[in-house]
Image 1 (cartoon, rainbow over the protein chains, first blue to last red):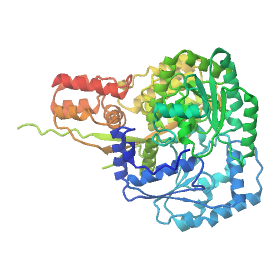
Image 2: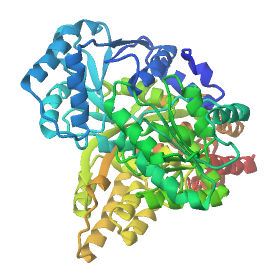
Image 3: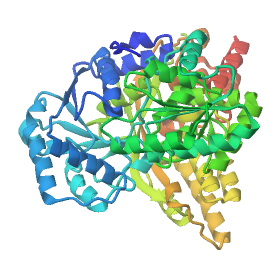
Image 4: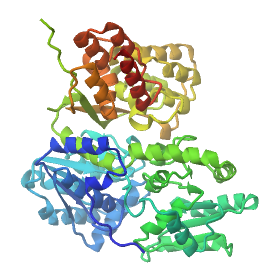
Length: 415
Length: 218
């Protein structure tokens, strides 16, 4: 399995993005020289936010911004509550006790010491540390930005009413898509998430490496392969993916990979995994891979070795697994939910399907028309390159910093 | 005495997208927002395809046409909105007026106000641009040609499209044609450069045509 990746600088991207892209980042960075920025979230490991910050913070430093990243500490009760908050913001019906809110605020107060009093901009990620803003006047009265990585469109109204009281005190907020936001009095900006094209999960691999990984999992590299990469979660509809495979199988010699992780401490994940195994039965062409952490190279190889990638989610955040497949020039069939709608421009960068039958039809179409798959793959790659790479993400943050305090004019000239 | 030529100064443009919080699920709401929304929103939604997927040929030249087609299934209206010739406008003000007139005309003859699914609401965004000098300056046609081969797309977009519609607002011409006419005094070349339509191809293809036009004049 893979090892921890080394920190990267802009120069490391020279073979992947255009010189103009890197020059632009340095140009913007030069206008922000000396700026001091602090990111605050609730974990350094696991989850998409930590993964992105591990990449972005060194790149911000590389363009001349003094950037630090701190995390708040909480007890089990706090994180149990914030998990409930996360689910309720995603639309799950949840009952909250006043004592839980009190404890949430108390933990935020206890963490006030993480706030950098000299930072020009403090970027607070997601709801866990959102109430740190209450110490703004005392600790740092400058610019505070709330970066929300969650789709709030179906959020519990009562909960959002409470959280938004904190959010409204920020200088600005950031959402991944317009559809994810809620009405707020403060400015709202859109910054899409991103993938790192030179990370273990996305870097180019030799054909030999891909073949070796596939064969290591008992997959025949010479036969068509349908793959979904996702944690084992009902919302990713892994049983539906098996239904798609079962529809297509009699007409092809298709193989299926369901690759993901199910943490030992996640009872639901274990339940989903068990159901998936039961449904797969003893079909030797269905490969259920419950991969350990740091399996990035293996996941990279599985996607690169696939004929078609599917993402049959019922609900989705931004869906970076789709971005990763697009980047690898794979034809992607996906449900048009959440951020997938921004990624899959139907029939151009991928295929949007609403049902098992729709997915199965497109799988058969691509198996029988490899040229179509290649065309979709090329467009998908171009879409990912233009919009969802970490270099674009960095540029958006630099523009955010320039934007703070720049007034309402729609065009700003910088000397 | 020879005229002192002002150099062509290249700028690059970078934009951040702001959410306005305004949404529409039918044409009445859509029209109401079109009338009042900041002109930066009109510019964003008529040029977003360039920002995000200019390589894709999905048949839509602007977000308004795409939404009325896909979310409202108002196909005739979508085609009319799609056919708006942005090169025919000097400013976003005129462009907005034209869009509003098309929607108003459609609403006058349609009896049913179609509703989009709530997941398909139109979300009005707007872009804010940061413009930075990005050199090298050009003093001659040769230097302009040389620079045009290397400048980033962000610079090409600014000088061909954004500068005209959002800054000068007084000419149908782009920055290159204005400079060629005013500084170099080559009127026929300026007219040829002004006639380049940047809206039906990728910026790379537009760059090729611009370079071919200029090279023919050298």
